[in-house]
Amino acid sequence: MSAAKKLNLTLKVWRQKNGNAKGNLETYPLADISPDSSFLEMLDILNNGLIDKGESPVVFDHDCREGICGSCSLYINGEPHGPARLVTTCQLHMRSFKDGETIYIEPFRAKAFPVIKDLMVDRSAFDRIQHAGGYISVNTSGNTQDANSIPIEKEDADEAFYSAACIGCGACVAACKNASASLFVAAKVSQYALLPQGKIEAKDRVLNMVKQAEKEGFGPCSNTGACEVECPKGISIENIARMNREFLSASITK
Ligand code: SF4
Ligand code: FES
Image (cartoon, rainbow, N blue to C red; front, side, top):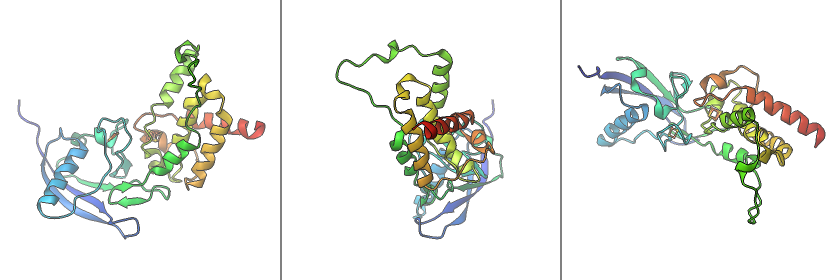
């Protein structure tokens, strides 16, 4: 069996020294890339070459490289996490690209995600939204009821599980023309709203998380559905409808 043909590529990579500097696309030719390499391994190869030449490597976010942590980002050929569906940038492979292709690599762009350097953006706004309500309070005095002994409808448990699959990557924001964080906030609100453990703080949670998202500068949702298409974890926009119902009900009754 012959080895898969190696790829010769032209990379157009966004380089920006810091948040205040003006950025630009730099062109880097890259030869002999295995189609079995991951996208981030391809960037590692680029960086090794830059370091060998005494140049500064391209800064990009990554951690688990297993599609779990939500650290990797990247706008690749105009799409958050690139051309493949339901995969993060770290799980994207070079077989998704053609020999001779030019690949544009840019940071996620949103006012609430300022560029730190090159392809790395500050997504701490998501942490602050989580802090505003993405938790439950549990009495840990020793007489806490075992979670497994609380009956939950199978449908609700499944829906909560799907919502909890959100890894907080921010692709939904990057895909949205309004830079709305609605899909992220809705996934977090839904995860708890569907479970009995989350009902106690449900009203405060939705009001505070939505308020924090607005404060951070994320835009409004205009239902284009781009977020759902680009979400690597398949989070449904039905979560946004649930969040809106929760928000309305909390606004009236709180
Ligand atoms: S909803 Fe999807 S795209 Fe948005 S942060 Fe969560 S996993 Fe990422
Ligand atoms: S590096 Fe963790 S999800 Fe991509």
